[in-house]
Length: 327
Image 1: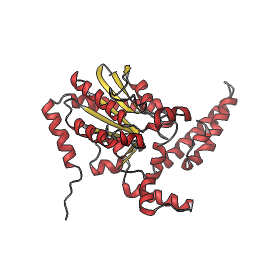
Image 2: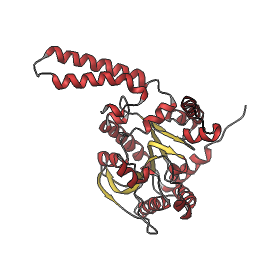
Image 3: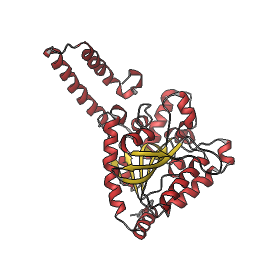
Image 4: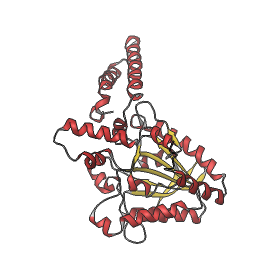
């Protein structure tokens, strides 16, 4: 991986990775000493990675969720599913490129898959609107979900968005209504709905396609009503001191309890998908294999439920959220 893609807390790993890369390029095939040195450096690098990634703060996990080399929805679709046929348009206004979806197969199971898609470079990010859906994106998603219900196909949704697009045009075309309608309609879909939060899960932008029977979340993803930056800006306003601004973001991330570990304890999500050592961006294929394994496990369980049980359990799940008992 290019050095420019390392995050601040990953810097101790940079030098070891660089040395390993250089030695591999220079190592003759019969040089046992160099091969042993490379092996020793790799072991040292793996131990360091294990130490770093076992003690991440919430803010550091937010940074990992935004890593530019982290797999996106279309990456997971290409690595996990077969026979993907993308469907376009909301039949009302336009085809929102921030939302992708269509028919696919998962180990022989015919289903509908959808999710937000970000971009790798400037051109792609503009094309995908940074993974921020317009109302037509949410309406396209609902059209696909209703189609899946019609053909009695389970639904798999990947969430990875910094939020719904807040522009004037989106508001004029009914952004809030589109999200609210999706929440209502997804709550009563008569087919299994499996949600996987693979990166960022911000506010209504995520919830607009995020109502399901089982909510899974990758180890280094985040899911919250607001981003740490947005929370910090509201609570502490803007500050000129970069160090204070960073401290505010860290405090906001801690207060929001937005990591997978936090949300399992709070009962907001149902399970955590482990990531390869160093995060999904360091081993996309390994991450995809773990996601696939988890999807299959939970999807097979959901497909065993009849429609009545499915709806009852889904509604019970969301009604129980936020319930607490005072001592």
